[in-house]
Amino acid sequence: MPVEPRQRNSLRIAWDNCVALRGKQVSRPRSRRRYSITASVATGIVVLVWLYPFWLSLQTSFKSDADIRESPFSPALPPTFGAYVRVWTTLDMPNLLGNSLVLAAGGALINVAVIFPIAFFIARRRIPFSDALFVFFLVGLMVPPQMVILPLYRIAESFGLAGSLPGLVVIHGVYGIPFTLLILRGFFAGIPRSLDESARLDGCSDTGVLLRIIVPLSGPALATVLVLQFINIWNEFLFAVVLLNNSSNWPVTVGVLPVQLSQYFVSWNLPAAALLIAQLPTLVVYVVAQRFVVRGLTAGAVGG
Image (cartoon, rainbow, N blue to C red; front, side, top):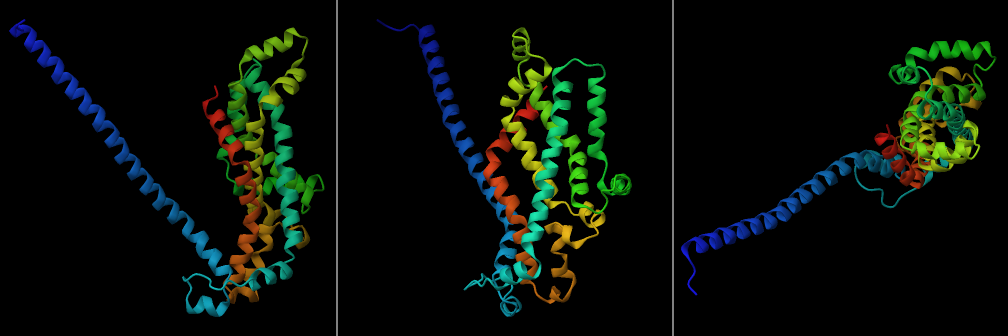
């Protein structure tokens, strides 16, 4: 049966459309593959640039002073642990690490214990001026620590906590409130309110809703704020060097200063070893809790 010219044109148009569509489908995977390769190469370059100072400090810490002066950028072969032994014994690193652990863990726990119920009521309860209260707390994120160091010292002195480790723990717990509120409020706002209503129908009060509904669901958010506050307090330097006047209370960030400011300044491997020892606990904490931190930050970002 002969095909009419009109049908022949329709078949040709349909065939051309199929060919064009197939060409687009083939070109899209190629373009995506090309973009993926470019992004991977760019990411690899950024990672190498970011890791190079760490690698330089690491291989410097495993060298002797003579090897550093002779070839500062070459790998440490064979590695030596003399700098680590000398730093550990000379600076009393167990005491410094213990002080940092008390500061970081205590400050993070106080921070979460104080702000957890506040974030719950701001995010879950329709209280007057809740948004204004939230903005008021967030103003603290814009205040640099240099501006509040003197008032904090005066307040700690009035309570008899100036120059003591417990006083600095309380200061760190209070100073981190704005950041913790930002994370927890975003997470709490993303939890369905129907859970609160169901719990209240069963006779739960606000405290019951907080302890039986919100707390079990807030594992990622709690892990996020605890880990990030722990790392921030561990790496903090200004408050410790100003507010602590006794070297026995110094954290590790302040305690490693003698390596650079005294007779040890002529050695490059000692500062490198001291700084690596000081940062190792925070690296371990973040690697262990990385999954919870990512989940908590994502939930806080999409919260209402």
